Image 1: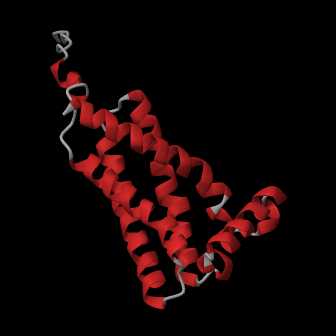
Image 2: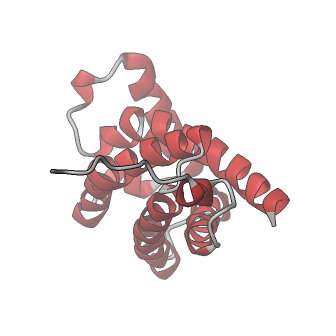
Image 3: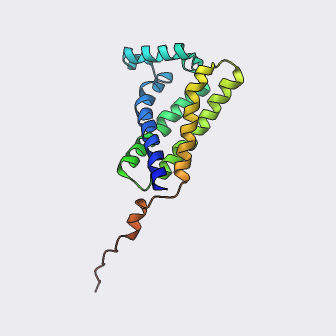
Length: 166
């Protein structure tokens, strides 16, 4: 079980690292004024929307902007915390992974339902979004898997003796 957890943590580490960097710099352009971002990031976002046909990024429908705000305010801090939790081996990592995974899965279902239902999304665009659905499920599973023996080490520490009061 330990090797599987290390593999899942390694995959989630790369995913969370990408989210920690990309969410504020690229996704933030969907709900914040573009003049606060460097021109190179604005051009990169415009290129992406054109290259993949991501009409949600270019048209910015209200539900999508709301989901981006949810990502920036709620999911992004969870990504930062989860990244730190993986590196430091924190016992609360499953909790942050579960919270992140459920939030992202919910958002991805809404986004992918719109894309598939509208018929506007190309196969190339769907292939760009589906991995996020998979990572959300992986984060949920990481949150539901039992704690590793490392996280239970704090439970087995000897108790500190208390001073008697007179």
